[in-house]
Length: 137
Image (cartoon, rainbow, N blue to C red; front, side, top):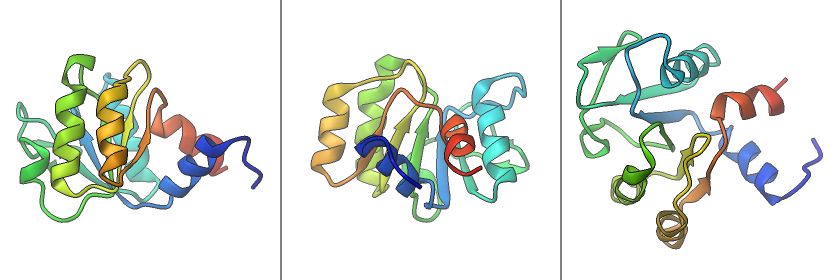
């Protein structure tokens, strides 16, 4: 596949990762986080729900934070308010994630810089489900 730019190359590389922690995953099927996680599960991804307010979602145990999540994490897909992004980037770094992905409207330049400096890939202001559908058809 021909890539338009470096971001497309990064997106395609990240789509090969298999274990995705969805931070802020809601148990409400009408919420974007729920729909995206359900779609990714249908595509064969291993989803790790992260939300301190729920016990389980989509038949999976939910963890209160990234530090509590069992096993290695490839991508941290963020569905939290913008004011929590910096904290989430830092948690992803401490958890040893390989990448952080923020959904539409979520941008934190400083947090992204810290993550990149720690060796993580970063994609911001994009939907993982939309990018998967666009690049994997």
